[in-house]
Length: 156
Image 1 (cartoon, rainbow, N blue to C red):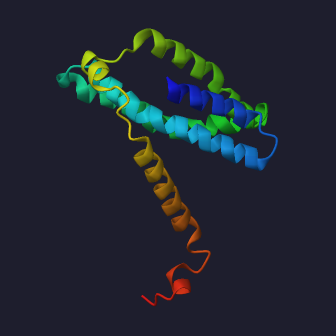
Image 2: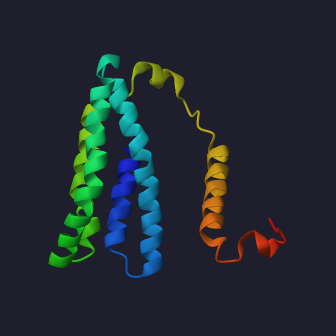
């Protein structure tokens, strides 16, 4: 529910962005919220269906994953041309609130997770991993522009 709330709130901030830095920060928050939804959705599917139906559940999930990138740009272009670029983000609000409501009503943790999970998150490790992966991503994106390894004396 936190992932849905972060994604939906960040979508609102994206639509309300008054400049590019605000839009970038809101998109980062949107990515953080959206990044948590995919593995949780798969976990919920695998937990909800018996093992013999896991293939069907993942296939149904996969259809959405495959169809969304096909329909998304076309629908996004139409929304942008017909209304405004802001509506690309505002369209997530009713869907997000509906998802939040439905998850609150229909999804509950299995008993073994409720008993085992009591603050078992390594926040320091998670934060350091996020910083490390973010730094690696920045290096891979910007390293070529700065001269790469030759700049630091590596001749390869």
